Length: 575
Image 1 (cartoon, rainbow, N blue to C red):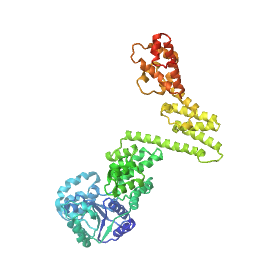
Image 2: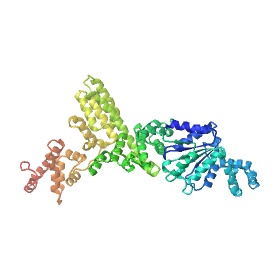
Image 3: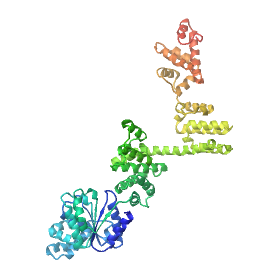
């Protein structure tokens, strides 16, 4: 039965102005109450409802309590949308007083007839005067109502279902009421036998409410919401039919959207994509629904392998869940997703932390956008044999100048080298200077060649030297002696240290070596300098070795003793 068919059936129930009772059954969260509320509001606006009362039986423990609730929650057609309140109750009480001829009730009733909205506090003391007589009269005032009895399967254990059905029958046959009973047949347990035995006598019809995921989505993700189509599509793809879950999904997205509204569209898409899956898994349990803890983890990429490694064969359930995740396009939760998880678990946003993550992901999104733009420009070189040199140079230059902040040193150098190969050194130099100035402004560590991924076939030596120079200029370089001592106790060295040692003269090394007295680490200092002689392909390392060895030869020439000392470090042909 489609949602449209159900709507027609319920509307016909409300249009027929005669006593009747229907049962609307369906799974928890399928949207029975949500749907009913929409239909009853529409019917009241069309004049099909005079008096309406909605009562949830959740925890109701006796029939007297239920009867009172029907009267207390009754509203006129104009108040159906707003629902019951102390004011609507007062109006109902006034009607009871008008129709009463019992003096015990009529005296306080006269005071209620003059009831003022400004003096609503007077109602409570009057209730004591009314007593049980007034309460009985209120029940007899229930006539020609449209009544919805919801959550019947959640009634208190002390209230027999048989008594509820008896009340429904009496209200229909003796009070001219139209009653809709909303329930979940699967949760009636022992009461199902009672219902099966009596429903034919009590109800004029039974409507099974089982809308599709598409129909449920239309109820929650209405057209006026900007993101309805995108969210509904994801909900439908996961086969979610629970209205409450959908409402929570919308709540999560609407709460977090303001944090990404002015950011790259990629963040909004990730927020929606992740929120749908994470909210569904957080609030749901059952076959075919991925575990929230698993979805929250970042291990989905190797999950199937890990499962197979432990047990040989994945279970059908494991394979199904893996397919759900794969088809949805979710391979694990990143830091952005984990903040959605925090919101689900805590119920509030840790604003400072979330804003930092959003800003970080915004930076990545912009980088990805610019990387894509620059990559497209390179397609003019890689993807064609057309004679398009002018277009290629102009496009690469334009994209490079616009996106320099997002271009790695390796890609920048490859672009500059291509310009030189095309005999456009003017453009190559322009791009080189553009990138270096950007790096000096944004983050000088970008100029640190130790962390650069350079392609061996795309290194432009002029660019490389300019980067080295830019990295060390204006930096407070350490002294030569401090540098040598530091290298001697470590297994490596930094760019700054190489810069200091390669710029030092043999006189500088001589001064340092001669200054060492009574230091048992002298030999380590000498070896730290001479180790660079083994790097034949680096000009800076060879300069260090040459200056240090020349200083040592000078020391060796000063005395026979020093000659013996130095011979322990330098080969004989160099001593």
